[in-house]
Structures are given as structure tokens and as C-alpha cells.
Amino acid sequence: MRSYFLPSWRQLWLAALLCCWAALAQASNKPALWLAQKYPGGLDLQQYWVSEKYDGVRGYWDGQALWTRQGTAITAPAWYTAGWPATPMEGELWAGRGQFARAQSITSKATPADADWQALRFMVFDAPATPGSFTERLQAIAQFVDAVQQPWVKATPQWRESDEARLMAQMQRIVREGGEGLMLHKASAVYRSGRSGDVLKLKPHEDAEAQVVGHAPGRGKYEGMTGALLVRTADGIDFKLGSGLSDAQRRDPPAIGSWVTYRYRGLHDSGKPRFASFWRVREEGMPPSPASDLASTP
Image (cartoon, rainbow, N blue to C red):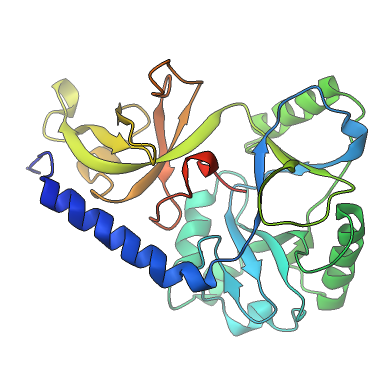
């Protein structure tokens, strides 16, 4: 039977120290990416391009190698990136709708397996080093993809929506079909690092990250397993994540010190999330950016 405990301050300090060390080790390679804000509604949609929000691993091609958002090297087979341009590209390493765990598993391996990588598509959605507006960068992306001529490298389909009702209908359709939501890029926007209102995400739920600081024991049918994860946000807000955990995860819960993503519906006055439920272990086990940057990728 698994033992359950609340960690001592020494264990919490050690976990925080390890996270800081890992963050410093990756800092020099962390790309300065363009990050999205939540869609606020009421915009002139004719100024935006719309695309599906792919639930995969965000990949940054710097012209020579692939990196994650946090600056971890992605070891792809040589054939996968053969002939890719020296110009940076940004895209999603995507295994299909509802296949995030598979994409994460494939891209996290130090020794890539050809059969696994054959299932991954690189859905290119931006060209960070290319000057000009987003519309102009879409033309550059099309040229990159045409030059590469690899079936696993695709330009992310982009389209326009005339009004918010049609936008919401498209989002709901994609979610029903197993997708995550939509992305909106302002057509006139130049690429810039950091979170910006010129790139927006539209999903039927909100999500954020928190660090596991303990495991609460289960009761009833969950006796002998984890009943809930005790988590803490980057803002220092503590709460429990009980729903959303599978039986397998309750038997072998995310480790203390790891970061997880949870879904929720708004916040209480205390700052705690409403109706929070566990979603998945964070992509790289790394802490998120400061509190203003807690939303998930992109």
C-alpha cells in the first residue's frame, strides 16, 4: 500500500531548489515566443486570422534544432528535420486530436523512435524571424512548406470569420470533434515576444498550472489511493485537485514538486479556482512564467 504524507519544509525547499536549478540550466535556450491572451469578445473579427488550437507540443525550429517553449532540446530523427530552412519556424508537434499524451511522450525521449515520429505532424503557424505582418508571414510559411516538401510538415490552415456567432459555432464544432479550441492572430501584427492581445485563444474552459506539494489520502472507493492532489499556484494559492484523476493516477500520482495543468471556471474572491479539475502533468515539469503568464500554451 502506498504511504501518504504532507511534505516537510525541507522537502518543499529541495523541490523548489531543483526547479530553480533546472530553469536556470535551460534559460539560455528558452526561445522568446509570442504568447496568447484569452479572447475577450466584441472584436472586429475581420482584422483576424482564425485557426484551430492544436493540442500538441509547441516546437520552435531555430534554423538548426528543435526546442520546446521552455528551452528543452527536442531530439527528432535526422530525417524528420532534413531540408528544413535556416529561418526559424514555429509550430505544433501534433499527433491528432486528443493525442497530447502521445505527442508529449514521443517528443520527450532522448532517443527518438522512427515509428513514433512518423505519427507526428509539424503544424507550422508562424515564422518568428520573418519581418512584416502576420498575413505576410503566412506567405513565408507557405513558401517554407512548399520548399521542404515533406508530408509531415504542414502550414496551419487559417481562415476568416465574419462575426462572433460564426466564430463561436466553429469553436463548438471543433471541440465536439475532439479539438481544443481556436487561435486568432491579428492580420497586421508583427511578431514580438511575450503575451500580447494580438494573438488570442478561444476555448470553452480556462486552464492554468500549479505545483504538487502533497497527496491527500483517498476515502471510500479510493481508500489506499490518492484522494486529491494538494497543489500551489505560482501566486502561492493552495487548493486541492480531486476530480479529473484516473484510477491509475490515483494509484501513482504526479510526484511532489511536479507541475500539473488544471481546468477551472472562474475564480472565487479568495483567488482560488472554481470547479477545478486535474487535466494533465505539465509538459516539461517546469514552473510556469510569473503569475501574469499562467495560461497554457500558446
